Length: 325
Ligand code: BT5
Image (cartoon, helix red, strand yellow):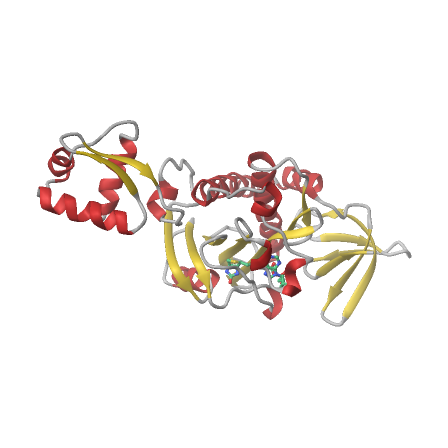
């Protein structure tokens, strides 16, 4: 563990009082000069301390940066977030997580970034986010499932985000548009991108990529997105604490993944239904050049959408773009 991380642990354990330089030096076996140097480094990263001669330092401000040790502080999950890595800028957190998973990263590893130079949506589309305002998140999971359960993992992630926002942040209804959009007021607030490495009968690993618009301002959205996208800040009219929200998101994902592990698929389906904004509505699904039209009548246990055509035929749809008509 780095010295800065150890110092921050000491401050977190003593948030209500001043901690003297001498106490820090003694508990971490450092010289007083080394302590001073580390505090200066922490200040440069954005931490703020009250400093009183003879009494020491008191932590007064944590920077709005997705530092792993801050997110991990107080996290009590079983799997998700067991390891957290964060970057200032990466091409795509999904690509980094995929690479880490190929090299054996443990299940539950979370990769975060303040900015992505090549944020990815599905089918070669792009994910846009300004620097340092949103949550750009990828999670490595190694579920013992067959590859066709990948849609259920998307559904699970969407429920986790949906529940997190609805229970922790807003009373405005949160809706899931199958399979991977979370919407508020009919606008997209979060997109989910699952990528997997699988054999014929077994998932090797899956990367769950989540882009959540947190403190994005209206003017941060490109013209193309102003009508279709929204952020928590726009809804709440205030800045949201990203560290706390990331910690909560990790907890909800951990809880929902536990349900997958316990094969509580029917329960997940019920939860999904409570968030679905297309249930029993007239929809079209675009899949490449093909289009299906009919009524959305639910999802099956693998997360596939059930679409009933007017001739009564029920299609089990594993992927595609859904539109209400
Ligand atoms: C998605 O694809 O919605 C999946 C987005 C996943 C993004 C995360 S960020 C962390 C991780 N690392 C990555 O590289 N990706 C994941 P799709 O359903 O194809 O939607 C993409 C479309 O959403 C784009 O074509 C835009 O129209 C729209 N879009 C792009 N950025 C948006 C934003 N910030 N908010 C709302 N809509 C957006």
